[in-house]
Amino acid sequence: MAENTAEHADADYVRIFDTTLRDGEQSPGCTMNVEEKIAIARQLERLNVDIIEAGFAASSPGDFESVRRVADAVRGPVVLSLSRTREEDVDQALRSVDKASRPGIHIFIATSDIHLKYKLNMTREDVLDAATWAVARAKKHLDYIEFSCEDASRSDWDFMVKVCTEVIRAGARVINLPDTTGHAIPEEFGRMFAYMRERVPGADKIIWSAHCHNDLGLAVANSLAAVKNGARQVECTINGIGERAGNCAMEEVVMALKTRHDLMGVQSRINTRQIYPASRLLSQVIGQPVPANKPIVGDNAFAHEAGIHQDGVLKYKLTYEIMKPEDIGIPSNKLVLGKHSGRHAFADRLKHLGVDIESIDLNKAFAEFKALCDKKKVVYDDDILALVTEEARRTTDHYELIDLHVSSASNSMPHARVALRVAGEEIRAEADGDGMVDACYKAIYKIAGVQPALERYAVKAITGGTDALGEVSCLLRENGMTVAGAGAHSDIVMASALALVNALNRLKGRSTMPLKPTMDVP
Ligand code: KIV
Ligand code: ZN
Image 1 (cartoon, rainbow, N blue to C red):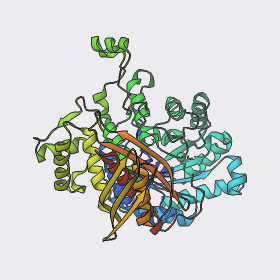
Image 2: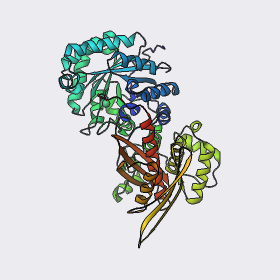
Image 3: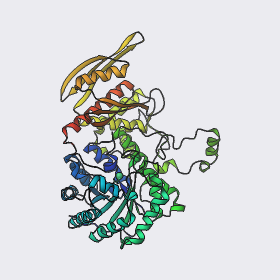
Image 4: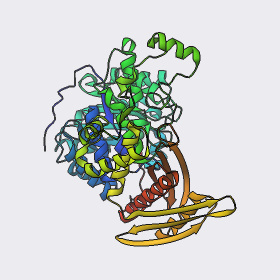
């Protein structure tokens, strides 16, 4: 297996460890299929992240396959798999990254007494032995080993000093101290890093890493406090997706380091112009819109509404703007292409938006773009992105929407007639409903033979105007599984139908995949 040298171990910059594909993907409605994970991984490579956590290889054959495919697809970043301290986990994780140009493994075990007593049923000595044993085993096969003290922020610091001392002796190159439950406060979290770095022998030879959850809305603040106290790696996700309230948002921590370099003194090596395309791509893939007020990437992040602010910005931008939208990759002129644009310009625009044009049917996407130009006067970047991800969504489908007819009048029940291609066979159904979307959903459920709970349904106009592309996202739950779906179309009912069909395809994909064993996933 390839060896990784610590080429940047002494360079003073903050490594960005992206866990969108592992911790992010674990959150409800954020599951991705392998192709989607590869598209995100390629965008992470364009962002220039240092490390990609591609999954948890031992958790299911599907996860193992995803880690392998991502490891094969990217060349720049280290690609690693998460692993518990068990032999079978470590070996699966090692196998999953053996094709990576820069392979790594991330081994974790909880160190807090509450986890030891109630979850692991282990003593501190057991945990110390398990951690040291697992790191030593992995070290026989590869050099890049990260070790995490799960629930570090609620662990006894002196016990963590012991564990970290031993795992560093066994070969760990990175020590991660997570705030697993999002319980820490910045001052205290920073102090923990200072304490550990002062007492662990060899602390200056390894990289210290922070991994924060956002339960109290402090994930970014805690990560910055860790950096102030010597951490040189931050673990984060695009748009801050992740378990419960999410993980530290990559775009926020990266832009905080850049914007307040005067105070922080260190930066990441992220290509910040790829932030906006990454955010939009992820949002399209998981079917979860970015909230308008989300820092850095929300629609309103650079919108000035108050007259006094507008006046100031017009006179001198820095009166109210601390960052430049173009530094984040937000197109200064969102109106980009029209019906006279050629295939070349279209492909160029897609590349700028972070789309891997090799992985889509460009001719088909271009034809759809032209059709959209006929319907809409102006086509925006987000329209184009929605259109190609809609195209990508349709490629590996069990269900395909081929016809939809809805009718509604003030004196009659809304009615829908739907035709789906199901595994190659055309099936039709009709239904009445409380509204056109309800009728259409009922007809689709009849064809698919399912009755999932619709836990969320949201409509968003992707760009302005009544002719805008509408984006619908929905969340379905059936048999304990939650899947998201998204669809975009200039007709809202059509977008709703596409979103449902997309979710049903994911449900289908999930139910034919071996289920994850019941295990305590952090
Ligand atoms: O939150 C957590 O503790 C984790 C670890 C596995 C790093 O995700
Ligand atoms: Zn986590």
